[in-house]
Image (tube, rainbow, N blue to C red; front, top):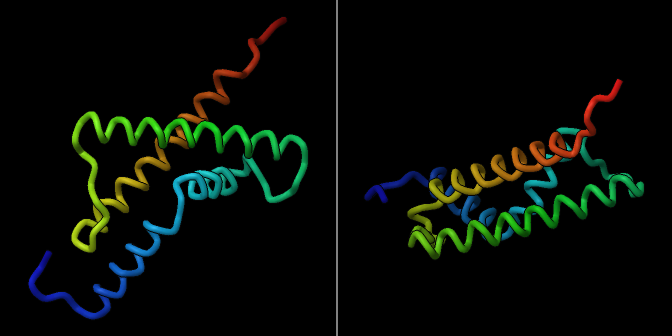
Length: 114
């Protein structure tokens, strides 16, 4: 970390550190699915099934990320020094999970029949 850091940078890093510790990967993936309009806040049957499916896929992906981190030795502890790196890693994981979900939706599309 730099020797001198401005108060505003420190406040932002502390905010990001708190965000890393309090915001789950699942909530960010669900937020992305809402932005895409795939799920809504309405408690319809379809929406509840989609939400449950997203939660399950995210749980499996998160487990895979943890296992991969242990296997490769790339697990980073959350510290003020690596907050920016961990934020980027988390954003990448969210994007990868959303792409996985999109792929699974496309894979489930029925074949065209004439």
